[in-house]
Image (cartoon, rainbow, N blue to C red; front, side, top):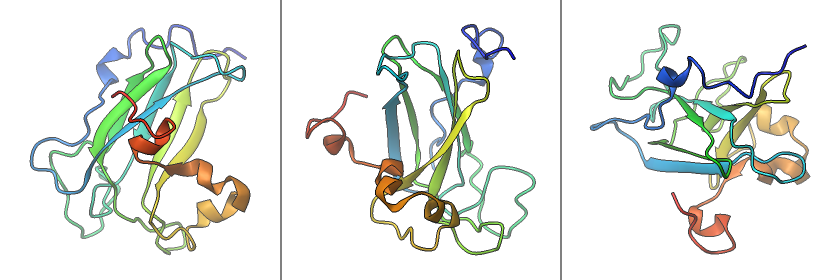
Length: 168
């Protein structure tokens, strides 16, 4: 019954990586920024955000993904970023391609997100989806009440802060 922090960073700093796509990696380059806030909207300065994703072709950088799709040696597929004093995190990556779900049906392109923080007995998991993609056949998105689906959609930075670009 212990929580994961506040000393989550001790011994794990070597896993921190915020740039998932090296030179020559194919795909649309994107930057993901956000903030971790507690229930009172106070920034959480010692959380860790992890992301997992497929490359632009829809292939994971993992040995269990044996599908005959192009791999990108310069693409990590995994990132980890501790939050700063204002609860902010960021990742430089590429927009992922579609991957099949457990039933073989295609899922909308998405990035899996885990948040670890003090006070949490278990990490929080969610997904980031993208505006303009077809989410109608995505099994996970269909489990989210229609009124809440927009909360999973990434927005361009100019929209994220009342029309002003957010700092990187």
